[in-house]
Length: 183
Image 1 (cartoon, rainbow, N blue to C red):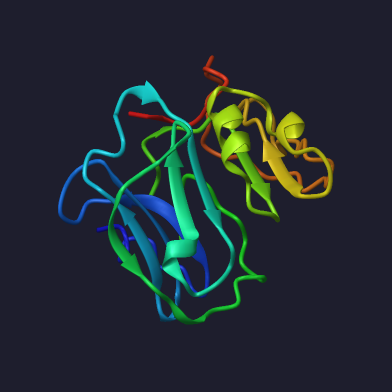
Image 2 (cartoon, rainbow, N blue to C red; image 1 turned 60 degrees about the vertical axis):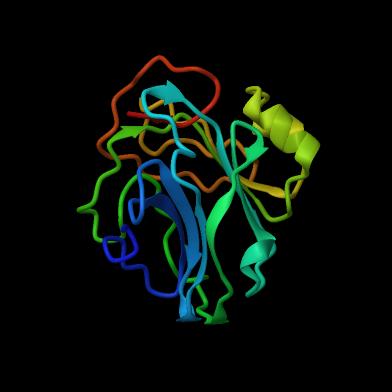
């Protein structure tokens, strides 16, 4: 399982989970007891573009963390409530690698977006169809949007917040407007 491969101190992560079967993903937040939500086997299809989205209200209740693939909520095999979740406000946001920089995601990520509000079902469906995060819910709730063209570093944050980021190890790839492609 990736839990031990991505040791994040006081943070959250979305990753593949190989325990008990292929094609699982999990959302987890570390704490005294880790909050964990793991999808059923076969949730991820390899070698095709897919849209992944996680909503979470920040509580210790794992059932309040929902994983959507291509606009449809997955079924879950694990739902563990957290306790004493760690403060992750000082952590850097990383995509496609572990905090040590040595566990690289073997695939393509076309877009990343973060909201400071729960994205609603109709918005999730629009995003899964390829609608830009800047038009789904414009305004202050979109706090990070990286189209990730792979051609710039720093890559510009198009949310309007201006949290440009360093991009390393990427290659410019023509891609579908939805993300990410898992290979």
